[in-house]
Image (tube, rainbow, N blue to C red; front, side):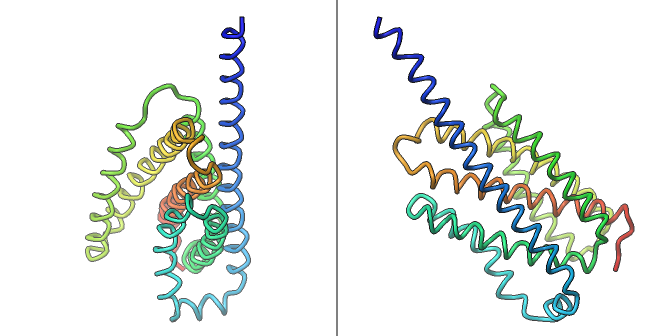
Amino acid sequence: MNNYDQQPRTTINTEVGLNSFLTKMFGWMGAAVLVSAVVAYWMSTQMAFLQTLKGGGLLIPIIVWFILPFVISGQSMKRPTVALVGLFVYAVITGGVISLYSLVYTQTSMVAAFVSSAAIFITMAGIGVFTKRDLSKIGTQATAALIGLIVAMIVNMFLRSALIALIFSFVAVIIFAVLTAWDTQRMQKMYLQYGDQVSTTGLAVNGALQLYLDFVNLFLQLLQIFGIFGGDNR
């Protein structure tokens, strides 16, 4: 009789724990996106300051912008609170970087890119949560494709082909959409496998960071697409 009672309780406890983990992860990711959006909007109204930044003084913030995710990821399991603070510091810096795009793209393009990014992200994250299919293989392929795409984008920086850049942006959107689903499923599996052995807070921070990066990259690529079709060139 006790054996029959034990399994449902275990299942319920696992589901409750997983739901709590996902709520933390998506909550922190969403909060980080909101912080970036508010900072980007506020800084976009400070045109004189943005022009000063564009003219110089961007080297250190850009270096920090590239390095900080690795630091946050490395600290997430050791010092979850420090990593969480780091995530929001990174969100503020990202908002500042994104605000510079307001010097090139119209507000219409930026809003359209943000709304489209949110729609794609929510859809793909939902697939990652609910699909029964293992996305490991397609996720690994998407990662490999991303590495190749980055190399190709660097080459195109010298070629300066708008058409190639547009094609690359469409490919990047597909890649980051796939990575969103994969990262969601991957973090879910990690919780189920290691949730009782590691800090779930640290795991949630790490997942929030990965999903935040997926969202930001989706936004930047869609912004370029909307900008090209919208004729943005300010």
